[in-house]
Image (tube, rainbow, N blue to C red; front, side, top):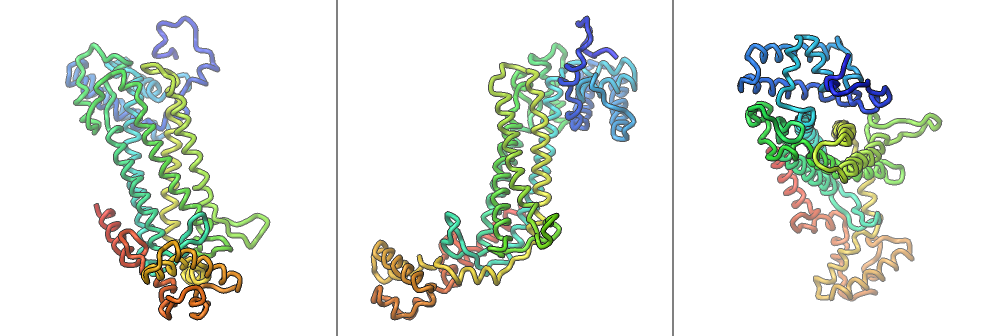
Length: 458
């Protein structure tokens, strides 16, 4: 079969060139969007009198039959037809005859493929937002159940101050909420129609771009035809938001790996999200969070890859831009799969509250509260800081923790210590007293939970 664009050529395409330049191996994922866009386009052509009503109906019915045959695998895509657009047009012409060739009136593959990708990314961005909300719900549920559960808080991966486990988990709720807002905001740039821009300069036919945009659910059309066919900012913006979200998922995954280790034993991941070893029968490996952590690099790579493809391109469309699709598809599929695994993994994990309680009782993370104790009695913070440093060193040298020291030992370092220091040093009090807005005190954590619940109900 001759190429749809082959009239100007005297030789067939080199087979290797044909195979390497064809995109049907991956852009077939755009089949539904391509047919949806074509139906909207030919509907407009009919309204504008560019094709007859009879031709319009014939083409629309033919496109629906083609879609049905593709879904039922009654036809096969051909590399010779290069991409999803030309394969569908070939199927259409085979289905209804030469009138199928009128479908492409007033448009180019350049605006057609851009439209397909806008539609695809719009649909999947909305789906990803829903999946993010499922993860938020899982995080919220675990947090709500663990307001009173205490866990060591870390800086530099060294124990710093005890915190409510709910407070720690809610950190990820707010990270995910910012991610969700980024995706919502990106829809403003995704929800724009390029259709009708033609190859780069518009068309001589009296088309109505705004009607087609409305038919496809777009908010508006590109104001500049060259911008319409050459813009891939909306994909870059999506990939950027996806990269930031995967970074957040990776950080959470890292903590799940650490917390589930024998050294920490703060949580137990459900068996359905772990695997074993082929040689060591005792092993229970946190493969899912490890894999999520690794998938982050894949998403980063897709973003940097497309940035590199686009950085030196002159206007308007160039064949280089065929490289925009595989990374986009992979990012979408990676992110959706990651979120789908993350929500039930968080929901099903067991929190080992006793181990966490033991951890916060056997460290020096309550040291700051002794310093604050002396400050409330009029001691300058810097003097207090030095005193407490010496107390901690004394405790370490004597294999004790701060609650193990006697009042006499405290008074040896400063006369203002009284019996109430032992109440101040209890981990429960350390957490409860951090009641500043956004702090880890249980009252503030409950405020956070209320705010998070409000977010989820919107």
